Amino acid sequence: MTEQQKPQNAEQWYQFLSDKQPPVRASMVHRFQRMLTDKNCSVILLSRFIKTDPLLCFYVALTAGTLHGEKKSEITSIDHAIGSLGIRKLEELINSLPTIRLKPSSTAQKMYFRAVANSHHAAIQARQWLIQCRGGMFAEESYQAALFYNIGHWLLWYFAPLQMSQIQILVREKNISPELAEARILGSTIDAISKRLLTHWPVSPLARITLETSSPLNHHMIMQLHQRALGDPRLEGDQLRQLNHLTQQKFFPVKLSNWLAFTSNYSWTSEATLHLMDIINDYLRGEIDHTCSFLHKNCAAAARLYHVPGTLSPATEMLMLESDLAPAYRLTQTDKKLFARPQPDTALPLLNKPATVDIKPDAHTLEAHDNAAQAKSDKRQQDAYQAYLDKFNVLGDSYTQGPQILTDLLKGLVRGVGMKRVALNILPPNSQTLKVVKAIGFEEGHPLPHSTHQLSPNSLFHRLNKKPACLLITQQNRQQVSEMLPTSFSRSVGEHNYLFMSLIASNRSMVIIYADREGLPDGIQNIHHQQFKTLCLAAGRCLDQLYASRAGAKQ
Image (tube, rainbow, N blue to C red; front, side, top):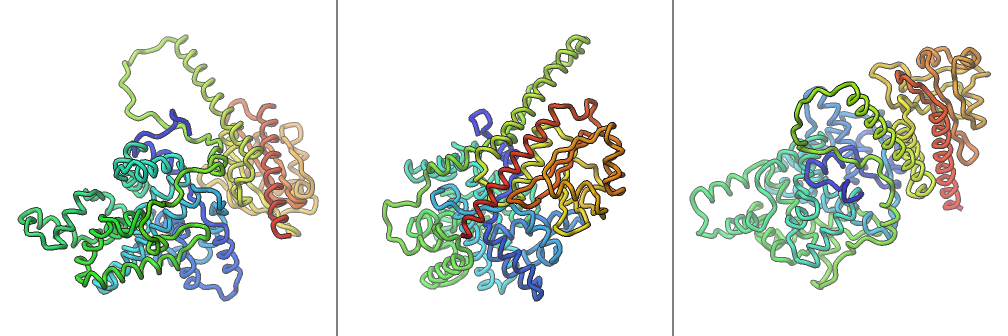
């Protein structure tokens, strides 16, 4: 991300992060997939497993929240979200998730999982507090809200690690407050970015409401609540009533648990953390020694439930003596390699554009403007094509799953080559049924996406499945090709020119790519044909490299 591309405020960070997908550990996805193959698998067993990983919880809540949003309803717990989806939708979801294998030398990846672990710690604390002092009322809803309250930290550590490392340097080395450091580096607090993301992602209404309240994490607020907890007589009148009202709000334990997780992340013995313990003790109406022990037990339980090998869990901080040592927060050479990937989508829209004078242009001006716009569009498309090509050729080892490569291939064909519609077709071994598993660019209700087609023995797809080839179907060869395609498939593609190409990795067929430029006046030109073939070949080599490395790891 260049300085020109770097977002400057919460809205621009939202624009940058809103289409990003935080990856899940590959081992968790594999274990989930194995559970689904067990004939004794049930939603209850899956629910227990999902709740051991906050990232799985995020994707389940996001999928269920989107479905509920269409019905004008909301999810109120992780269990509610899981039950809303059922096993079939959970299986579809798990097979589409982005995954990651932790690189031990990557500070950014370890801090990414540390941020997730901090959120899980906050969620466990909030739930246990409500079980103890409120009889469990709103415990699961608050757990869900506390889990996603700091979602911005997750995404920023993975997709903007340089900025997050700079924030840590200011906080740990320059003794600047986290809130001020965030504003200096990001142009906004991370809370503001999280709030904007949660407005877009329906994962927790309570988390969104909590972030929308005007009670930021700052020294002044903690001091006031600490004074109240100690019964300071200087607090009186409206000020005391406002604090009493705040502590009775449904969102208060959500905010308080995240304050604790965030502050103890720097030190369990700091003045701010000790003040928070007094505030929590007052909220629980307990004895301070018992409350401290209770908080430590909750932190240890959170670390046992969610731990990523190679990362420092929140509970580890409790065992350390106070010293000048701190977790690694500066990026390594591994990080610079991992996060130097081309990002063709990071160009940000300009906000607050200046007003323009409405002057009617003449024909020559319009023509020049159109030519300039077309040249700019062509340049952007060519840059995207080169970025995806480099990603497959140079940085292929950053992929951990075949679906990640195939998803990027589809995006590259649309954004870099200029294809209008693309689809992934799979023909399982010894099968006569073609499945369209993923499609981009088709209008709603089009029959091709997610369709199946019965194949005859001499089908073109059987041939493409056995031998890699790139075919351009035009008016000249349409009749011949149509005889080798299922009628249902031929009907779906219409009368325009289109392309097929099969990708084979490690001597086994993977997918057959379909692409067209339906509705575009110039159709498929030689340049589109050549770039389509080149990008598909690069993705195929990337797949081959991925499966070869896996085979070597097993030996």
